[in-house]
Amino acid sequence: MKSLSLHNKQFELFISKEEISIIISKIANNINNDRIVDPLFISILNGSFLFTADLMKQIILPNTEISFVKLSSYTGTNSSGKVRDLIGIDKDISGRNVIIVEDIVDTGNTLDHIMDSLESKNVNKIYIATLLFKPNAYIKDFPIDYIGKEIPNNFVVGYGLDYDEIGRNLPCIYKLKE
Ligand code: 5GP
Image 1 (cartoon, protein in one colour):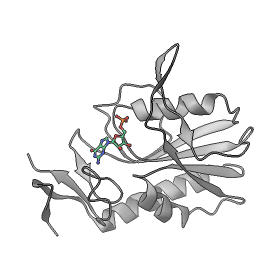
Image 2 (cartoon, helix red, strand yellow; image 1 turned 90 degrees about the vertical axis):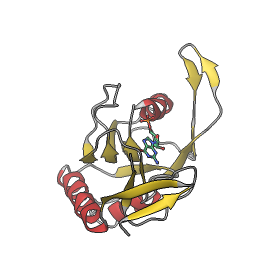
Image 3 (tube, helix red, strand yellow; image 1 turned 180 degrees about the vertical axis):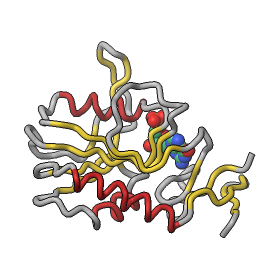
C-alpha cells in the first residue's frame, strides 16, 4: 500500500518492510558484536512490540532475557518536577547490563524518564537501542548506542507506532502527508 488514511489524515509509504528488516539485522549484528554479558532487554511498550519481537529473533548472546515495561502515565513530583515510573520490572536488576528497546526517540523526554527510573536500580550498564531517531528534535545528551535509522521531524506511523492508537499493526512505516 503506497498511501492510506487514518482518522481522516493521509499517510504515504516511508520505510518498506524490506528496509525495516535490513535495519533490524544491522542493529542485531551490532548488539551481538558488542558481546554484552547476560543482557537484559527492556522493551518499552506499546510502540516497540513488533521491533522487539523481530530484533530478539536475531540476538544470539548467551543468557539473553527480555522484559516488557510501560511508562506510567501519572505524574507525581520530586525535586525535578514530573515523575513517571517504569511498570513491569518486578525483580532485582542490580548489576545487570540493560538494553532499552525503543520504537522512536524524538525529543528524548521519554528516555529521560526511563533513565530516571532506572537510576535507583543500580544496574551495571545501560545501552539504548531505537529503531528510529529524529536528530533534529533530540534535546538530551544520552548517547544512543544503536540507531536503526535517522529520520526528519515527520510524524510516522506503523510497525508498532500509532496515530491516536491505530496503525500499530501496519507492516511498513508511513509518514504524514504534508
Ligand atoms: P520523545 O519523548 O523522545 O519526544 O518521544 C518519544 C515518544 O513519542 C515515542 O515513544 C512515541 O510514543 C512518540 N513519538 C514521537 N515521535 C513520533 C512519531 O513520529 N510517530 C509516533 N507514532 N509517535 C511518535
